[in-house]
Length: 406
Image (cartoon, rainbow, N blue to C red; front, side):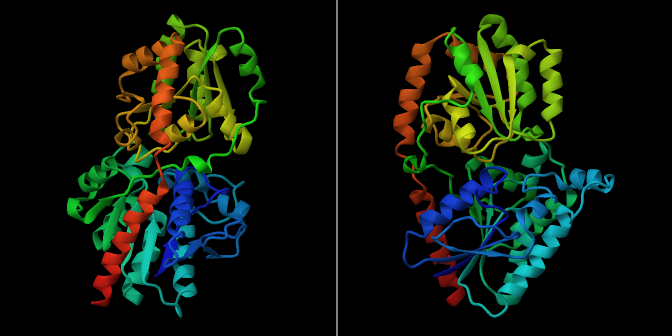
């Protein structure tokens, strides 16, 4: 079975969970010897991937490509800001979408595939074009929709239009959670029976080992004096609910003053959040570490006593699973997909600042509670595997390729 994958990013050049999910899904799929995958990206880079063919849609390098933004930008506001700046060069994100669509059509004009599998709205137009020109069945995989990314029901009108038309025209829609499935139905009136849920996952064997020398020296030093650490790793955007976490942090610090909040990530709310921490008079307890990869990223998880993901609307959210794998229990918002599959974690409504603070405080003041949460979560996460997701995808592929040949 020849599968054409259309995606916007892969590690190590990913801005979030989209690239990570695409990587692990394709890696798991490739274990099946009957599956041959070609993955088309909008940029040229060496991903050191040997289990599938990775093709660049254009010759632009990764640095040039990233000037256009990333898969999570609210493009309506990003392009408005870009048009007012003379310091940014290159294409807008909307122009990148147009270039990608044209390039994909040209690249595959003399090729034959059994199915097209496209990830998120940036690649959906290219998939629709192939469906129209080649009559290949298309599977559209929704990792997030515009109302998630924008934190409201609005956002970029172009993205919403692309999502509405594409999801209606798709042969099958895949959602990363029941939460996302409901959102697709509510936002675009796509029939529920057209949407298949394939949860994201984690493979414990893929977790890189830690070393004893944690990169966060100051925090390691403070922990010797009884300090406990709350960690958040992710994009600093309206979707992620960080203002609520900082408001809860103030209440936590009042009851457990030896608590440090480590915020790892970048995004448009970066300076706003720093200002908020200052105005709440908790600046001494809140550390902003910016975007991290590799050892610094892994060590952020491992130094924590509790990982908190307070997202307003999170299609899935792999980071709590990664946190548990690196030795830190998690709290997640009930408005997240991961809350559907991870049972041994704390759960709270994103808007309930008092309850968020109460649960965090309980863990900060009770090492036995922290340890119990981690033991139970670890035994659960050890059973997770991307193979379950890939098996579901193979069944979907088989159904729609059979229908196409009938």
